[in-house]
Image (cartoon, rainbow, N blue to C red; front, side):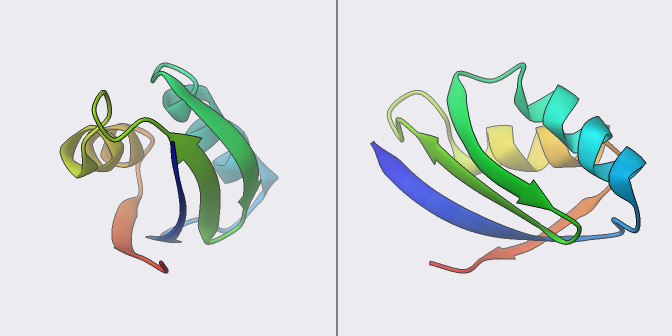
Length: 69
């Protein structure tokens, strides 16, 4: 399992947090924390790729800037 802190652009409120949580919940991962501007997750890198993460974040209406680790 791998943990990542993702930096996300375009989030400005709790509704944004809920929208991102909903999209990430569709993936096989554990959400450790989501705040405005970031998501801390744990996942199996054999099942979830950066492309999967980027697609979920884009579907929620945001942009993944980078991962912090």
